[in-house]
Image 1: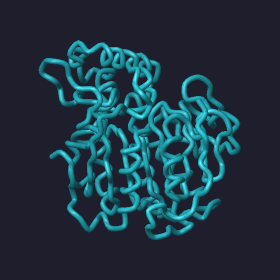
Image 2: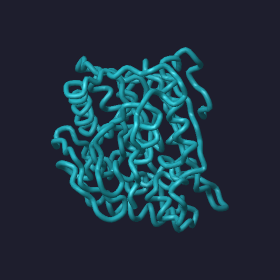
Image 3: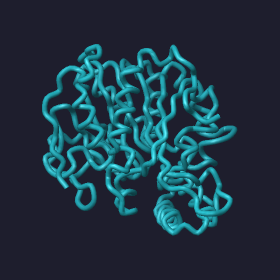
Image 4: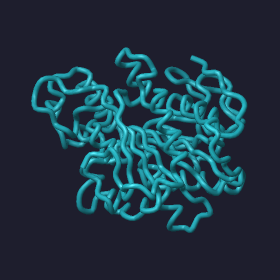
Length: 339
């Protein structure tokens, strides 16, 4: 499928305050994703211009008048290469080096280091000083790791806001199953859930380390968990969390770490239900009847607009999150979020 790229990137379409040329939106894709680098004027000429996670987000945000970059990601080490099959893309004008390309099967912290290096490159090469992160899935964890790197190294790039879409703040039940934390019986006989769990486990068992082995409750949550060591990182950054609940539990006693979910991430994880204020000081939450991605929608026989990153209603929330960022810290520290 080819998506026509949008031309014309003038001022904000809602007539809001004109953004500085040094401000940009950076879209970050998630685990096991391969996504090309794009800028306002540079994108892949064939297939999905910015990959299957980022293309609809990028096109929508360009239409709003933002300067938009997609950060490069590769499912494995190395530079991004042309892709075939589902979500294919090719003839990309710029390929950035491996050291600023997220390895989306590698560790969260290393991904954050590479993402931070990419942001510093945007500063040096594009004059970017302020960034709004829009992150899908594990891209939200990669972004948080990058923010910590930027802060601790006194980097010239500052983060204005973070919007996470289907991010497993508390882990994914697929990784929980793969790592022996939840049983297959928590699918309550749902075949789509069971298939996803078994497929993910097979993928994780191929990897000795990396995202698949880290995106679970044991690694992320509790005393000495990864989240605990992010305390304070987001204190001055407003965060919007967007979760999907397309799939609900069949009859039976449902484990909330599994149900409802978007096909990969439970709603309570996407909305950071059990993440305390020291880690996530200021949050607003939104829930949609959506799947995790167009890959999940496709597998379930659903329209692509049922996916979080392709749903026009979700895109509107992303736009508002960016626009509201300068004033967001003045409001309540929790809006619409589970407690």
